[in-house]
Length: 347
Image (tube, rainbow, N blue to C red; front, side, top):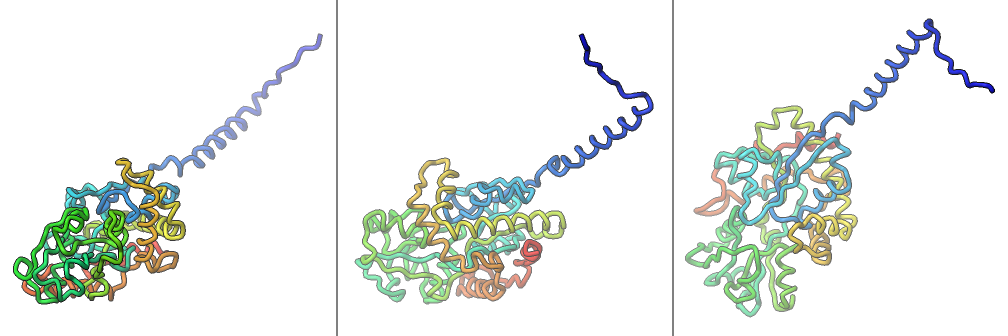
């Protein structure tokens, strides 16, 4: 009976085999080393609860764009009791979504925020009024009760009133509006604050006909200010590693926004999946995304997220022209905006 013979390497061959083994091990370690590096952590604080207003970030996360960029991104929802400014001031976020009026007011108050990207280049803010209240033009606001969001959202409104020569508390009654449309539905106010992608449609869904409403877009009234920009603390922009990390974040986020604009329904599904409250519905979020897309003129172009200096300067002028109560008293110049991160992302 034949036995199989196990051949052993001769002693003369052992050194060569040993070195080849070490080489293979080194190559394996070398190949694994990039994956072994921990992803860079980024915390994004949103201005409001999960909805299509922030679809681009959720899409980027769901499709792995952040992961592909070597980032571990945490998206923190906002809410009525959450101030993005306070969150970043407390070092609990690297970047926040905020409206420029609130950001510039916070900067003047001591929180050195800097805009590094401007995804929405148009304003979706408006006053929605019932025609039955007797309002057909801004001239009819005098003597009326108007619902206004506070917490940083009131600044464009106050500027508008100053431009109209109306003094809040004297010429118009201000109702500090919650983030709902009840004051209009219950006739507590002639007009309320709404966004074209959100609250306006809540009024319609409540059974009010569009023909029974009149709307005034801040954009059309010449008092629009920039909304939904991305802000960081000025001190962090001196850190090259931070700038490089945020450039990756912007590039991946813009990719998410481009996808969301192209396919609102797919984006809506991702948003709904991220709403742990279960209140978001596909139909509502799809409609919201379709309207959000109207505010992003530069989607799917190399200019997405670019802060137009002229739009920035216009917003500053609007905020400083608030009559006796300007939103900001000092022009921040170029200090409150930077293309440093956007340029790095573009490269």
